[in-house]
Image (cartoon, rainbow, N blue to C red; front, top):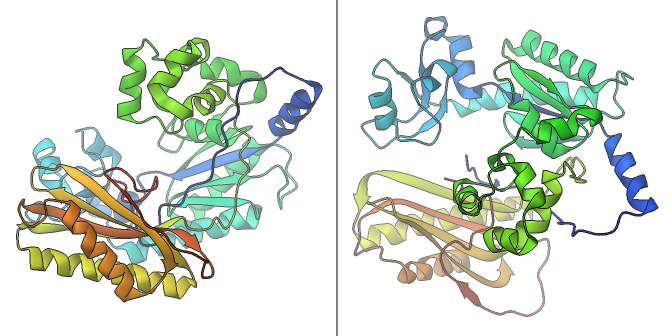
Amino acid sequence: MTVAGGGQAAHVHPRPERRVTSNDVYFRLTFAMRRIIHVDMDAFYASVEQRDRPELRGKPVAVGGSPTSRGVVAAASYEAREFGVRSAIPMSRALRLCPDLNIVRADFQKYRTVSQQVFAIFRSVTPLVEPLSLDEAYLDVTENAWGEPLATTVAKRIKALIHETTGLTASAGVAPNKFLAKVASAWRKPNGLTVISPDRVEGFLQQLPVEALWGVGPVTAQRLKERGITMLTHVRSADPTLLRDAVGSMADWLNALARGEDDRAVQPNRAAKSSSSECTYAEDLVDLTRIREEIDTMARENAEWLVGKGLLARTIVIKVRYGDFTTLTRSQSFFPTNDAEELARRAIALLAKTDAGTRPVRLLGAGVHGFVGSPAIGRGDEETGAGTARPGLFDS
């Protein structure tokens, strides 16, 4: 789910293979002593609706837009998931999969209110809370307000408080690092609690497919499988050249994760890395003037957000999805600015690098990234082609 100001991402530093030294042992022991919890609310939007509307409980529910106006599924209840309904699929398809589906229009203000209640619980336990979205976060509870040494006990208490306060359930994963905690939280949904203690890490890793690795989506997973790499254990034993051929510069990072190593700290108050707006239209847009007006409006919305945050952006990016679902992005980097006229002009100019106006357009988006807090000296242009948006920008 992408919202203005979203696309947040921690900066990752892959670590190459090296000889184990006494310093390595010290740092690994130090990181192993971390107690990390990943909490993920269960089918959050749909669960809130089922809580507030008793007639929906136990029934398949999808939160999102209308199936007659190209709406998409924002969230699906577990009852709906049994029919194959998932977030991000067209609502019309969801209705075909589940004819008895109950469709509810999203109420994001209500979801934000519930999210604030949940995060207030998190922050009452530890200041080290790293939000990932409205309904999930990492918590470092190595030191916590309850003085509780066992992260498992902390997780149980947090889950109980969430249920007592909101009437909703959450799943939690407890582990020595963020990667393992996130995998663990999804292990026994809904209302699950999975604990990976340091002595259980290796056994747990041996069960995991490559899709469990951070940053491995369907395309990357397929490239790995074509080379006989289907499990995390295969990543560790793969020929380095073969692995790098499949995933490029991610090879060292994925190798570290496959060994259960993830030294990233929980980062409270992460700075936004990007901001974007997008819209799916009820009918394909074919008029270039209308398309330009839409992109102009979105670029100005991003400019308004930048001004409100006191930021400048180096890069403007647009997204175009044609009627046949072919999707591309175009971006341009330049001197940092938050000037609405300049950003709109650049965004509209990028449309010339697309077939908008000659091919029907289903979706448009515009976003900014490369933030700085004050004007930078010098300027220069750099045009890039499809796929240049920073990870997290225009997630789809």
